[in-house]
Amino acid sequence: MNNSTASISWRSSLVETIRRVVTWLDGTPYTLLAIPLRIAVATVFWNSGMTKLPNWDMTVALFTDEYQVPLLPPEVTAYMTATIELTTPIMLLLGFLTRPAAAILLGMTAVIEIFVYPTAWPTHLQWAAMLLVLLARGPGKLSLDWLIWRRVLGEAAPDSSN
Image 1 (tube, one colour):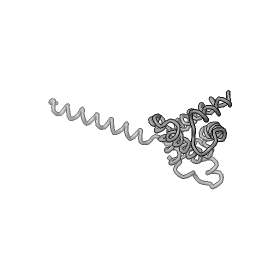
Image 2 (image 1 turned 60 degrees about the vertical axis):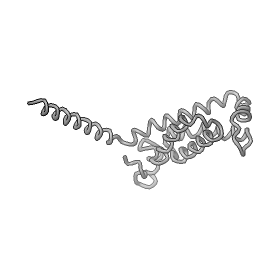
Image 3 (image 1 turned 45 degrees about the horizontal axis):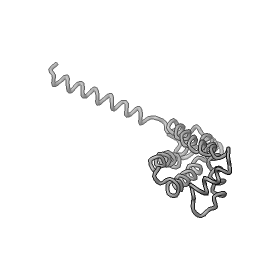
Image 4 (image 1 turned 180 degrees about the vertical axis):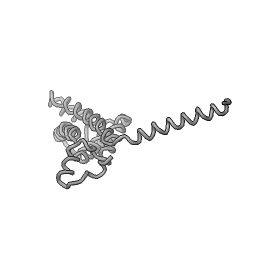
């Protein structure tokens, strides 16, 4: 075997190995990808909600002085935010009403980006990307949404078959 043949054989083997790896990765079930997305987003918002509880007066002051979300009084915004941050993460972890929870958190992320911390867009973009996947594809098969859909309608939920 000459150098040219050995080089072609080596390249062909490398291309075939890459092809097999890509095919294997393409076959990853969406459900396995959705689980870490659900956990990651839930953790971010849960942790934020938990920081608001120990000192409610300080939380309201934060919404009055630093966050200054327009249109709503700081007290109302603080209550709404804490409620969202402490309920939607549980919904995401359980995979219950995942798409509505993702839509709510996506809206909240937009408000945070636009009105509160516009220079934190790289972080907000990461949150939005994860939330958009969950909004578009749902929670996957390991979820209450899938189980309920299957029990109530007798069929798999849309977009959760992969």
